[in-house]
Length: 548
Image (cartoon, rainbow, N blue to C red; front, top):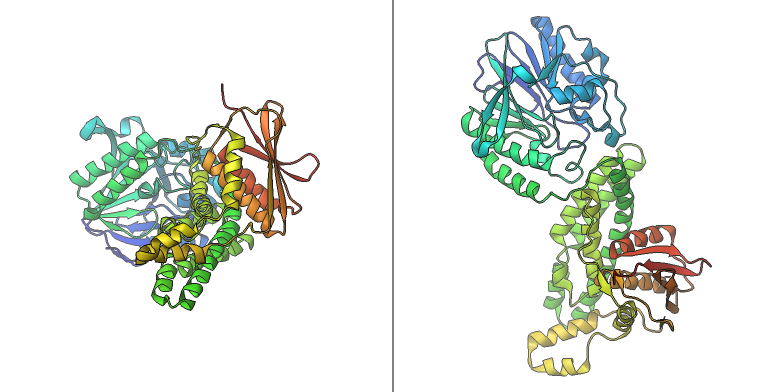
């Protein structure tokens, strides 16, 4: 394995040394690799961090003082996190004998300062054109190999003054210009292993079929070329024997991304807005769930059921989830202070969501916490990931009789979810008895003392196209918010809205602008549009009729 920021021999390349700059995976700056041989200095990516570039320049200048020789920068692909400092730092660009080498399509993007292809549009950075002296894999300079399955692999061998050779392979997918570079026993693989990550997959130039083929190209390289260690664009090196399993997982992830949307500035803005709502809503719902479980455990302990109380507390890792949310909140504070950029905040939210999902087992809480709340909590996580990935989930929209659905919804929140008969029947079965007892102890009658009225109107209404379960759950969420704000009477009224059907929800309490934005997104996913009623007295949901 290679050690961070230390000169060490390059395996299988006599007289060559490498100085790696390893970083924790971060979208704003890549690793960098500095190589020196008796005949040249080679750099694989510079990254985007100014401090890292200062160190690279100091080492290059030191090596040039020892022996003047040409300097070649190889860029694994033109995304700015890999080359921003090469573009911006005039000291670097004025190095004597400097040549910039990048795949031909990436060369065009850098020479035109293309904001989409270089991902500076996403980063919010500005760049100027970078002159490329050595376009790679262009026309006659490349050879074409055929891998298993008839996949073409373009390869270019570049002889070095030291007598060694550097080999470049075209591996598009993450971007059209993505390459792998072999020098000695090292294979520099750029962002191949991160190509399916949320916020990375779908970026300009991302290509699922090409990525799947490039995974097979890299398998071919590992099988037939003398590679002992793979050096990624982010994170630590990977021994070649560990790569097949990583490529298998990558291929599986890539195969599931055929419907992914483009991750562009519009998608980033939508994700950023969703991120702000996510932090606040996650804190709210997980506090509610933890509070209900704490109350249940207290009541169980009071009844002498200490072991049962501990079991329910262990079902929900509230301390770990709180830790994740606090970490997220601190990161958001850094963003608001200007120390992080937008895409970092969005990707941090992805990381936090993935951690929460690993600790939130909603299916084990369904007899303790309201099923509607658990479903809404689960969707809170999946909806955010769908926003990031650009998925449009309309599979559950179906023709629905809205008056009937609302009657069931109102009856469901108004009725007690258990019966005395079930409690009596469970008396002879200790496990069933404890389950019935827990259901009663955990029950929170939110709508006790609240008048919920439903007016379905005098005229018949057409069936509407809606996700029944999601729509009903979000209506319950609005009702809960109104009651929590002090409402003791809430009216639901159905009416015609032109060719559509409208549901007006009125209560004395008013939802905040943030909650309205949150519900506008949620109801939109259920098939309804949300607005404030014309007279400002309630929420108006408009649903389009189902096709006859």
